[in-house]
Image (cartoon, rainbow, N blue to C red; front, side):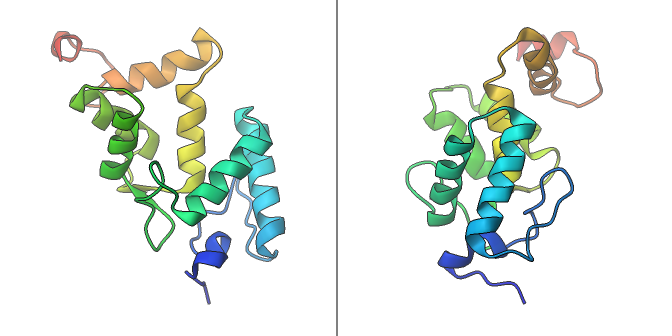
Length: 151
């Protein structure tokens, strides 16, 4: 049975898979290290940063992770507010960035959050373009229309 107790964050939801790996057979500390290590390798973000983010996510630390719920996910609306708190003032842009990070889901897991954070902090234009394109492709049709440029 899955636990949702605050100290059992890693076992609280089935999202503890990075690169199709399941960490539920391990204790919390080992699961956290494996998850953050795999996400670090995948995203090229520092493992130490991801471990700090994970601890904050599990603790529902303010201001960014206070909206993490009992299933250890954050709603797309709450994620839009996190984006806004980072200095993005356009409501449409906040919602669109959140939509792209969530990949169509109603909520984001820690892994999805990390992948989105990595895309927002892309190091090269080649890495940044697909994410930026998806943010402005509001209808998701793979094309940027004149109307999408005006919004």
